[in-house]
Every structure is written in structure tokens, then in C-alpha cells.
Length: 221
Ligand code: 5RP
Image 1 (cartoon, protein in one colour):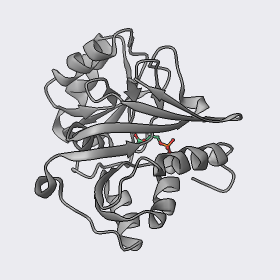
Image 2 (tube, helix red, strand yellow):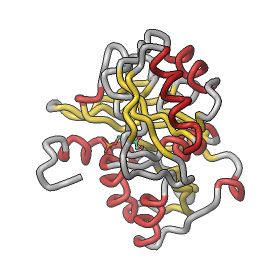
Image 3 (cartoon, helix red, strand yellow):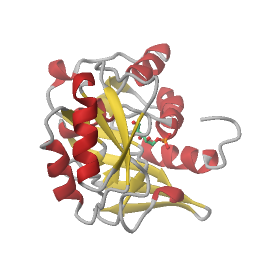
């Protein structure tokens, strides 16, 4: 997020709306990205027991505010996870992972009862796939997985100089036909060497806070 982010005001509005879903004394699952950063700035306004962070970057920001960090294994099930998305469709399926935190995000989302997705209106799509799917890959499997993706019609681009929190690499993959998000999620899961990827269908959002020029709209899925 920069001062010149044209969507900053919308991101801030979505984050402000998300605050009302946070219950007193809860342990909150916190996503990653510029929209989540707007939420993190507001967290001192609510009373949390603590948070489970979806990335090292988020963890550092939460710690700087004095928010206690819990390991997901300590907590078990979370009541609420709040995150952003790169794209979201009319069913709450998402592409995430622009920030490279997709694996930890998907794990925390899977362990949460509810996923609230905060977006500005540029993220709404009829069909997922204009934004590339970030695919986290074990380093040794990079070229094998890339060939499999090409065979599927994809165009994988190695994210140069980026290493995930788990020490893996990312292939940002364009041109995948995501007509059926659940099916694509399963197909990608089945490629040997893929750790995780940014198609979120099994972990789709339960509620979307969509910020636009007219304010924030709440959409339940
Ligand atoms: C990071 C993510 C983010 O949620 C996604 O990239 C959206 O980020 P932003 O709020 O900066 O637009 O999945 O891995």
C-alpha cells in the first residue's frame, strides 16, 4: 500500500466495515496484503485476545501493535478469518496469493469457521483467471510443475527473487481456464511438487465486504 494507491480509501472503508464482525476477546485470523494492512491499523480500536497471522509480514505488524500472536496449532479452530483477495466471483471463490502468502492464508482459512473477504470493487470478476494463479512449488519441482501447467494451457512465470515463508518458490500462472474453481483447485492440488496455490474454492469466502464509490456493500455467500 502506498499513498498513491487509488483504491486506498475503498480498502480503508472495507477494513472499517470488517471491524464490526470482530468479537470482544476473540483470537482473530489475520490475512496479508494492503487491504489487511488497513484493518491492522484499526485493530487497536477493538479488544482481541490475540491473533493468528497468515504471514511473517502480518505477524510483524501485529506484534508492533502489541497484539499477542498465537500459533495455529495452539488454538485449533478459529471463529473468524479476515483477508483480502486478488479476485472474487459471485460465489465467493477467490484468487489469492498476489503477496505470496497463499499457503499460510489457506491453512488459516481452512481452520476458521468464517472467512470475511474485504475487497475494493476492482477485485470483482465474473470468472476467475485474469489475475495469475500463484502456485507455490517445492524448489526442486519447479520445472516439472511448469511443464505440467503448460500442458494444461497455462503460462507459468517464475516469481524471480521471491521465496515464500516456507522456503519455496512461486510460479505465477496466466491463462488457466477457471470455469470451475473447485475442479481447478483439485487439479492443481494433484500436481506433484505443488505445495499450495491461490485458487480458493474449498476455502471460499462466507461474506464479502465490497467497497465502491457508493460505500461498502455486504454480500453473503
Ligand atoms: C496475499 C493475498 C492478498 O490477500 C491479495 O494479494 C490481495 O492483496 P491486496 O489487499 O494488497 O490487494 O492473497 O497473498
